[in-house]
Length: 300
Ligand SMILES: C[S@@+](CC[C@H](N)C(=O)[O-])C[C@H]1O[C@@H](n2cnc3c(N)ncnc32)[C@H](O)[C@@H]1O
Image 1 (cartoon, rainbow, N blue to C red):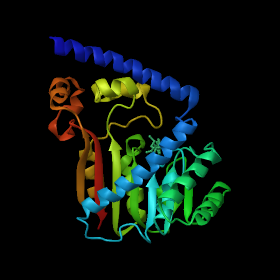
Image 2 (image 1 turned 30 degrees about the vertical axis):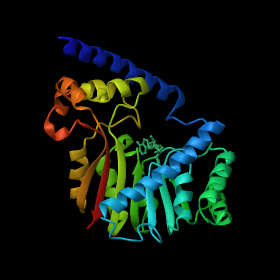
Image 3 (image 1 turned 90 degrees about the vertical axis):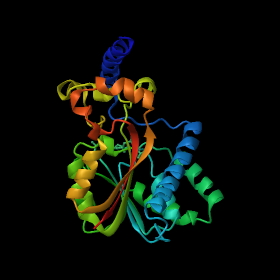
């Protein structure tokens, strides 16, 4: 009884959070981070950490067989967020070129102090050619591009943005769960992926609203499509589950597809909430224990 009441409570509280997110989007558009000094330091560290973790995951996925996983490779990032730190860090690690595509231009207000901090931290970390990185950034921010490419595409048309270039590595961090149509996105990235290309993505499957994310991580899965759809906006979590990613990757010529858990629901929360989710998410194939996953695959 207590369990049923609590689940009912989260059903209604979750609706309030969905409503608040919808209103925030209507007022402010897709979220832009503010750049206080402390925040800038955190974002630089975050960018370094994301790339380091992608490389580590790639090493794990390839069993360490490929020694030069990123050097000389053409990299594509899907949904890079508010700055070009990841691209610059990858260039410092000798990738051949980096291209990022986003539907929202989130980098236009990034302050120059952010990049100054990034360059000073990069200089401390490695023997990077900072002048080269600065000139690449400058070209990109002034509308040109060379080895650091940032493309804003309203309809997120990957083929138009990237072809005829061929890509060796496709990365994405906490972005796939925001895409409108993951089948179209995977079709597009598959067209530009070279044979043997690797795909490594972290997908955050949980509720994104802050307070409720901790208390009831699978809250967004409580609602039928019609009700969830009332609060949806471009970029709100799409509720796509791991088996659907696997299916889309298989259909588009990817092999050795692996799903690794990045964060899981405790057994206690899984048992006390899953049967109260909307019926389409109750079946075992949804693997509702996964809160965040790594997807890895190789282009056949
Ligand atoms: C949560 S942010 C993640 C950004 C960055 N990768 C990070 O880890 O901080 C999601 C990214 O997906 C992009 N995005 C949101 N909705 C999208 C959509 N419908 N189609 C394509 N990209 C979208 C955003 O502009 C943003 O770059």
